[in-house]
Image 1: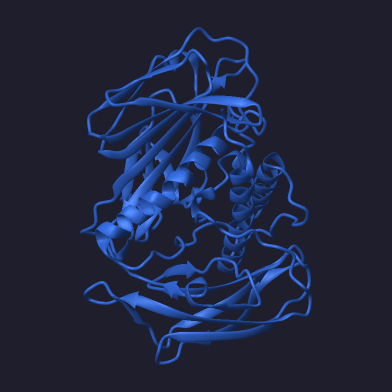
Image 2: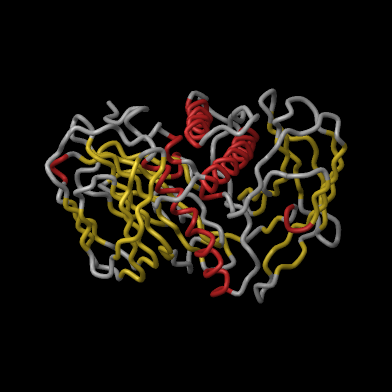
Length: 408
């Protein structure tokens, strides 16, 4: 039996948001005029021997449409000698539909962001694809974000963790086999009902065994985020979390006023307030492997549930992700990374319309993922459709979060 249910578990998937795939400044999808003739022209490229992107001819590109009424591929074409592809299509059906392109390379699908206008060219339509490898790349932990909620009536505290995994190379890292994870980290010994909740990684690509989080999903160049949630009973505190690898940026958010984190170099920042919930925020940089974060709390008292806890985790992680990606790109000296390889399930998107508040958007994302869980065996096309639907909704969430007033 799952200990943390929908209301107590951060509105399940909604609380996790999956904002990580949305670039800072992403546009908010609007309602598409029906019958509009649109044009897309982009280029599929692949890193050359020196890391410089080179055009990829004869590469198959698929145009997708995802709407509340239906979802699926619309057209396909192969790139020409210059790696260029072109589509001409007409908008149909539900006005909230999103359109995007994808290309499969070495068994991994790479997607554009949803097209935002009737004439899309250049970077918004370009697709970068990569060779794959299972050796020779050491993922770095660019950021780790830990959020601990106040105790619920049963004494359980909800915990959300987001890991920013950096691939400082020009190849997509894949697991060697189904038994060998490409990245792993320890869970607290008393962690209850751990689960993947959004992020760049689908639940089916992560296992929880031996007290560890084991990642099997491919990690393409750039910064990708793994988001997990679990509960901790009162007996788990004071909590000690060891850093099993160096961390560039460690962020800790605590809802409980009396909770205190202890770690060399950890400095308190301005508190974060959202929807009436206040979180104390702490940051540390260049935390070495072997360091131990300790979190002390007071005796358990009655408290309301933290339905936005993981939303806070990914919202703050998003603010850092842009800087982390830029820093990693500068170190590598390569072209901007593409959207993350899609391994998410597929469902139809939530209803578009007048912009709701953040709570409503979180709920819509919960509904989006909950619908997928009811599908016994989603196809690859449905997976692509779900990825686009999430991207559109994530852009709306990012916009809503950016519009929220800052805490004093």
